[in-house]
Length: 270
Length: 186
Image 1: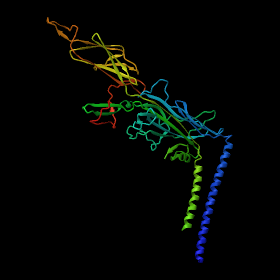
Image 2 (image 1 turned 30 degrees about the horizontal axis):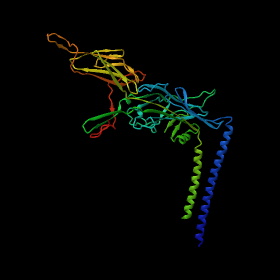
Image 3 (image 1 turned 180 degrees about the vertical axis):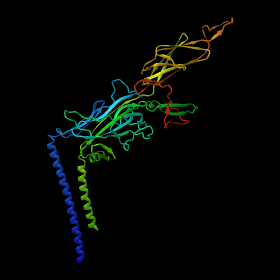
Image 4 (image 1 turned 90 degrees about the horizontal axis):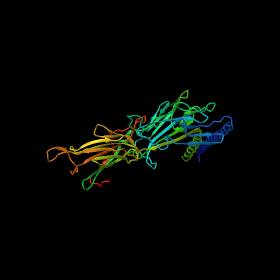
């Protein structure tokens, strides 16, 4: 083996060794990072006995909490419950065409400030609860207030105006301000309502499917079936909350959307 | 070449591990959620059925709601031009002036209207002595008096005020179809 080849081989070996050592070094730093994170975590848990930081959010219907999910550090548990929207008095039937007041808002039921968004679904189901995708969600008029709530037009699939050709079931809304944690004396803060009424449009009364058949004797039978007969409408609200600290990254990580937050904490979709 | 590949692989694995460690820290944000849902079944196809009794040359008409939703009803009666019809509605019935008599109250599921009496006036005939007079009984001619009954769904204004829209037209959706030569459904 010539000296030149030996030097070349030595060079390769030393290059590999350097890269290997670098890899070990990076991994070590990674491990140290995790260790530091773990230590930080336990330290925060310890100090939490003095300064409890728990996230929580509640969906409020007509002034009453209907659903919530709150974390409590003291017990290290999630307190949660999910109720029913649009309840009617016993024996009363939903009347088509009538506008029912339905105020939906979000309350910060945790102890840290948070940003919130709402995903509203509206759709039709049959008696077994199976979705009926051929029935129009646009017939379920969930009236938005647009008061401090930003519609995410890219994520929304529902019809948002007379000329809007979409007819999906989803509306995505972002509250444009941070929702403060409960103040002194246990005063909870709520957003403005994002919905103020629900109406099933009278148009459902006129939508039919017509079939004709002619028998061997030449008699024609016309059969008309009401499309919405016996169908049930469903309105579903999902409230998401995320911390305000490091908001842009937190929102990107939790919700997968890019936002801008100004110096006053006002949120804007990119 | 093999060594170069091994070096590149080692570096790639190291980078992947470091990147993985970063992903772990990215998950550590405080988040939560709450959900609720609700809805109701609707019924949109009203049905009604007519019940008739006949006595003293009078039809006693009553309509019943046989569907699963409340409705409004109306009635129209046809007879030959030689036969007179005299309506005598009970409470709730109103002459709409368009040939129909309307029952103004909402007919609940399983409910029925009050009677709408329609007296039939028989034609006058000329008796053998030449004096016209009302046909004496027994009247033996065949004739028809046809009663048509219609119902429509109760609609509500935004404030919850109920009303009937007798002019609404059904709109067949784009999936409606027809064929010829097939077996009738019923």
